[in-house]
Length: 547
Image (cartoon, rainbow, N blue to C red; front, side, top):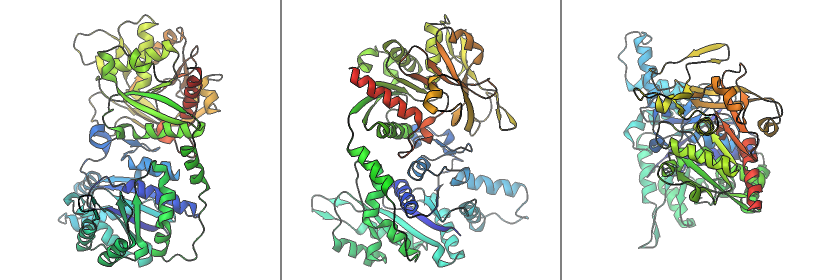
């Protein structure tokens, strides 16, 4: 029997519900329980797959090919539990399912309404595929009072009513603003947020209060009194230097104990926090520093590359160094010489992206790394631009390009070193795609196997001959140019099992230069850094010693 914890937010957005949920999941694991985490988003997009990174941050892809909210990345990184398609749902998906059922006649001619049809669909999603865990943590996106979130709040109210009282609790995250002019910490916004929550039938069992300053005991008592919660269930949440301090900080504040008390679980297992003590030690007692340049397209919003930033930090932990990452807009290199910008760095990472903007700058970054023997990791488009650079400058294909950028220009002649992927094998199924297909959910998504070439750097890093990694792309390096490119020294060291899709390329005469079609950052954990990122930072560390 799974117990359900519903996490809601109030006052303002971006308080850290996802981080609080992930940290709580980690703490429950530390006490010996199994957990699953789930995100319910009120926006009307079916999923974030077609949303701009500037709009919503990165799209986190699961093994089974779901395009989800970036909070699922937090969940995986803190708990190590791989998310599934069922762990992310939006209003758009809920309404789409309801309308499809109505078209099929499944409602037997009834008038379709938010209550009960939409709320029933939400409740089905909450309980789906969740009986394999002791705790199911469900985070509701947005804040209480948002009109689009009302069906979700009503659904979790009904869900709790339908179950025994010991199976569901509610945790509410709020803000305690500090007014410097008066020198006061204000509890009224939290009181109003809880009042709004109670007006729709939800009484929080636990309050997590974000604050920049310590919360005095008298303020905690005031919050407990006016919000009708136990004083020990008012949990302070202060700003931290690293998100990986959150489990220890929340444990010290009593969050996991408050949750177990709310469920009346007694006696409670003692937590084993060794993993998180070690992680904090690696963060705060680094034995050096490396500088990494991230040459990307969405550098104005760091959340657009959230998993990459975290994976670099994990690589630093593995090597006991701190990683100082600087975000450089690839478009700059289309106007200016990249050399003065990139010389100070011990490594260069070129991440994925969509569209033509900034691609020539990424190509120049790959060329710099190749010529100056600087460790380079190209991910998705970062691999494709590295291949285009090799084709143009070494393989004699001066007009090498990609169908993504060059194919739409009428009358333009180019060599399609990167082409639109039209078919591939997934399990026992052949997937076929057209350029004119709808954009949502039509990419090569989820986990696919790759075979590594014996004796390659990639095989050495992974320590095996076969890997499974997550993908999210429509365009692929064209295998028909493999022989011409390998003559230049660019080795195709990882390929799909049938040999038709290049997965990894590397320069044989370079200290560390690897491009991958997949997204290794999505599978990196602080306690289990992805091998590519760990070795990439090791190479950067070696480079820093040479400078």
